[in-house]
Length: 404
Image 1 (cartoon, rainbow, N blue to C red):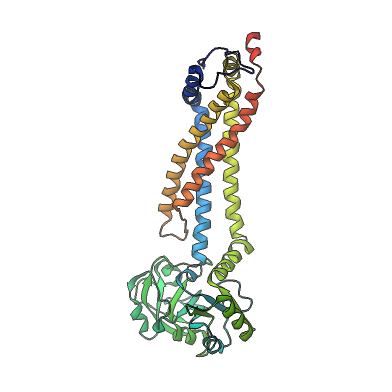
Image 2: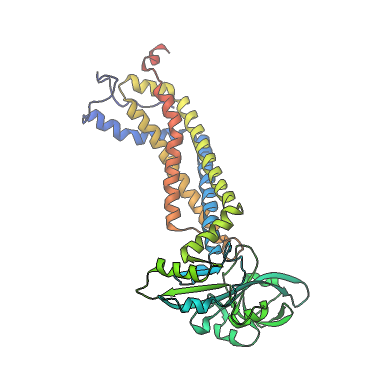
């Protein structure tokens, strides 16, 4: 491709146009045009570049979306509860790692100065016997909503009030096939006791893939064999004028066999356990890193090859007075144009994947913040990739053009 010269030798040291001169301004305006022509001159190279960028954007978007979605899934119940402090059995790794407290904690909590109220939650692993035979492990969650505690949410069929009917539970629709049920009103057994699906939720899933089943706290105690005073977690709400650290210290001294954490601390512990100690999070992060590496390598290789193919033209521009900064600007604009096109195609495909994943077991989340971060990442990735091409141009000898 023949590249158009943008000026004459200015006589300035190192070449270039006088700052603020008419030729300098013209050169600046010509840089995007030249970059555009360079980029679209070789359509095959452009397609290779865009495929690399699109692949990178989609892969990073899906991996990061899965990471965010996994975090929300892990903390799905924790996020619905509003508590200042959580009292949990010592050694509890996450919300889905339940064991029972001894049973006297609530009295000790309520008698502590600065405590306004305490809510109980019973969580336990149980066995679900399907109507047509076979068993499935699941997580039973008993909520004390009758006394002002958190209520089952995302009810799609039935109502919370129908859980007051004896032996009633709420199941998420996505788990119907796993539990062998087809519709609200179906019967099954939990630990040998008959139950009825009286309410259906939508979009409440566990990270462990084990189904959640919600019921009243008394019924959960009955199904899990807990005593009337036992609970898995005590959720403490403080008085408006209470000091959190003072109350926490007092609770720790009164309840030595428990851990007392803020809601944020317990949420982070659950996230750290499932995402990092099990390796699930590192797999997602590694996938995102792979996408970035592939994108940088593909774009860098394409820009380098394009620059190498046009070295004589760049040398001609240098000999005619174009500054090194002008040449660098052309290459950077090429990279940014590639990033913009690749990002727009990639984010559109990523949104299509997120839309297709709705209602499935994959919780892929795309937030405005993630989309903006991906945009900045794509621009930065392409600029980094352009550095190799810039280094090649920096070593051009303008006099070499006269030796051809």
